Image 1 (cartoon, rainbow, N blue to C red):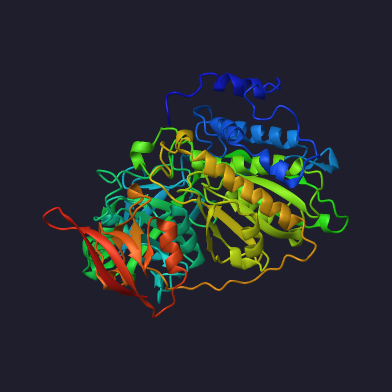
Image 2: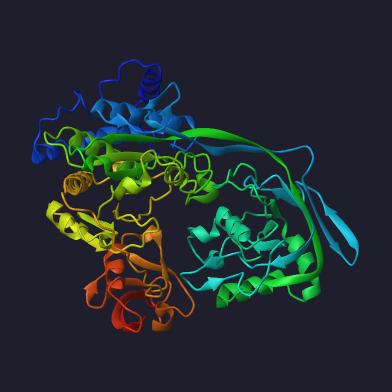
Length: 612
């Protein structure tokens, strides 16, 4: 967040909502006319227009565009206005008054607020025939992602962190039958207790833990702060109902309990929480167990409200009578994390502060706008139709894109490819990562021909929907999910070059006479270094955490090492590192050079070998 925003933004937003003509700072003055050649259309994508769009989309006045917020609604109306101005046909929800016509909006709901009902919230522990009830608000508190449900007199199980990570070969539920039992788990994940700067993985998300418990048949979920946890807050405060959660759950009750509850459960095992958590963190071996002789009764009842939000969808119809019924999707999510009440890397310090998300994902959003405008100006329409989708609710757990997949506004079988733009505004010296190039045999040639001076880092990707997909991304940075992700940090010249590149690629893809095939890409599990980089030190690859028994651990890497070379290739950023790892196979051994500070404070360059 910056304090020197243009003071007129709020007034402009009010004018827009009142349907007064758009103010003079809007990027385009005239609707695009379909009269331009490809080169001239691409030339309409300019730094000035990208900056003008982004200065509004990532302004303080939109308050971080949290899905369901007023700022997100204002952003959606701005995007709808632009789509209409470009001449895109609306392709969101069908209008009730006329089933043959569509809206630009595809409406959906996200969880808003949650409050405790007067009755129905309870937790008790029964051991040796003795029942001990606990007080709501003192010993436990329901989470807002809890269902209104009960699990009475159920057996109990301790399931560690409640994580199932197939890629890493780790499962807290391995060999344990928790069907119809209440599972008790620790908050966060193994590396939280040792990381100097902690950014949770998806396995640490409350929503992931709950969905995983449901998938294993659990009847209820109790989450506890472990004694080694550093980020739960002094005095183990409850997570609270203000954390609205990122997913819907209509199956099981979920509560956050004080650590003393788990200690009572463990009495009959001879184990202590600190002992179990220390063992898990250090060995990465589960310490899960059934808790015989213990019975738990758990119930939650909340009054929840939902907030409306919307995907914004427009279509540029193709020019070929047959191929126009096939669709190329060009998409980006336009929401962000609002005032940092969830998802902020500043943790508690970030709550209440506006997170503008200029790069994440204002940069992708305005890129889609510029591509749509440029393609609408083409004299010769591509053969296939291009569906432009700006998704909502991605920061809350891929809600908008999931809603579109479940409720497509065009036949799903007619979608033949997708191009996704996510964080494309912070290119390091013209570099951009393109994942998914192997998902169609036509992609690599088109990518190369559309390039104009960019440093392309082409990667493979696994795609679950069996549709050819390309993901454009310029990399993580220290401002990611902080209030400092602002417009003044965007590399606009390279941003414009990337958007022009994508526009040329999409035009060529949509204009092909031949079929766009799908190629299944096999994942290559296990070919990883086993480090977590320090995001505050980007773009340099500085080791923040090392997984036990990983290639990095076996090679002798240490926290604080700066990786400068692997396999004879210079490592300047995470994309360089990924490029080297993508070419490795299990059993390969390559050289690795790191810079390390010695005890006397002097920096030395060390070389060793790493085996995957």
